[in-house]
Image 1 (cartoon, rainbow, N blue to C red):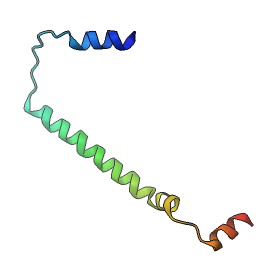
Image 2 (image 1 turned 180 degrees about the vertical axis):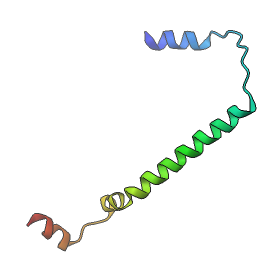
Image 3 (image 1 turned 30 degrees about the horizontal axis):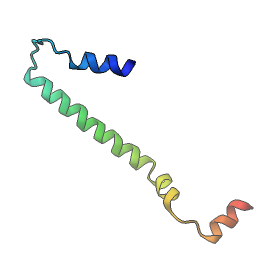
Image 4 (image 1 turned 90 degrees about the horizontal axis):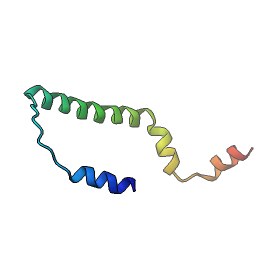
Length: 67
């Protein structure tokens, strides 16, 4: 039912008088680039943990963890 109401509201169009100044595009670009930079920093901080998940364990590592 909620999906039906959402689709009906989505298809109903009304005239919108909106103005986007040139600064809006610049702000959107800054948000996108900031998000990409934040993802890059997060990956850099957790790089060793991410690599350790996918690296196959050697026999010595499994013996050390079981002891």
